[in-house]
Image (cartoon, rainbow, N blue to C red; front, side, top):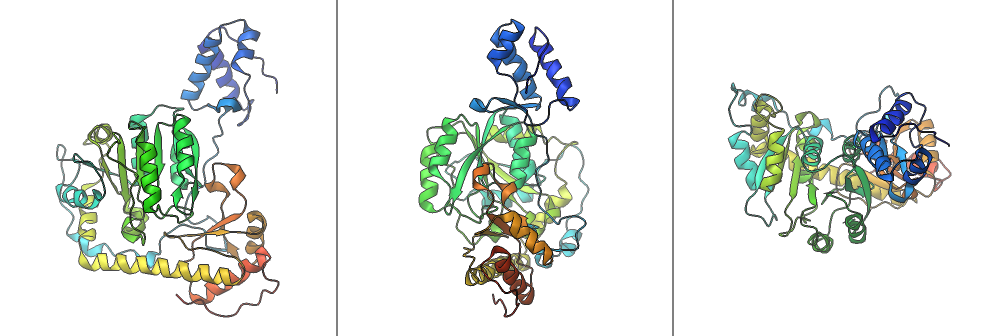
Length: 446
């Protein structure tokens, strides 16, 4: 596509392109002329064109893709977790915890209310004291600061915003947790994919991302969403060794499953790291509506977060903070959380075994979901399951690299009873072509 640009200054060229993008004349993904070509056509210095493109990148209107050139940014919304709207199908792609296994906050709420006025500490002292003990395992740093945000996504957004500029590169696991991918894209950062295998983020992938100049790394140490992979002790040590040569890259460790995880934590934050943060959200075990996460970080990173959490503007409600503290320190609630963890693991293991027996080998990982490799295109399997009354989630939206997509489903099946689980397993085998008959029989026992 030929684009005849106008202007003889960086602001003029940027304004011309911006107008065309906003009017829809340049569609998302459109490749812009090279810097050299524009400079020759307009008879101007190449640095002027570079400055124009940089202005557009900082505004989130274009994306620089190295040898792939500069393209109009795709503002299509990233898929999100949760129930699909307006469907009569049985939705098994939600990524939700079981509402029946979220602790009842009623009694704790009665003990949590007290007026809080301007000028009081942003973090409830009781929650901070408890969180400090909870958050610091395996952290090889003495000076650890605690910050409370409105969930893990809020923490990641603030962490990136206080350390990066638009168009800076961020290393993301591939496949990637949807909210992290959404946060990076809407923030105007460049996502650099790091492949994930059965032991989590790969060493070669991280090394390549660092060589490509990423300024931040987001890593899930266990219960990776969507695959369920957790870092082994050996893999975590290897990742720390790679990061040692990049002490000022911001390392964000998103331990989202924490109290529910069946895997041990192996941290990627080493003693050489100068910019780091560990995030633990309450959403999986206290419910998504809790909207609270705790972050442990180095002092400079904590100071950057504090600027964006000033009293009277964006602190997290102290009622919510005290409610969280009351719940996580209650022995009965902790026992309920442990039973929920056992339930999720048992149901996922049983369903993975059922699929394996039906010709769909599946390995249960850690977390709320199952990552199912398919012998057929995911789109065709999804369509057949829809005809059979099921709504599943394809793996494609989780991938940054399209070369790896197309052959996975991510399922949320822990709330299915035995009969429904057996029916879904039968239907999946037929849809994927590993069984000819759609006869539904048998039970799935956890």
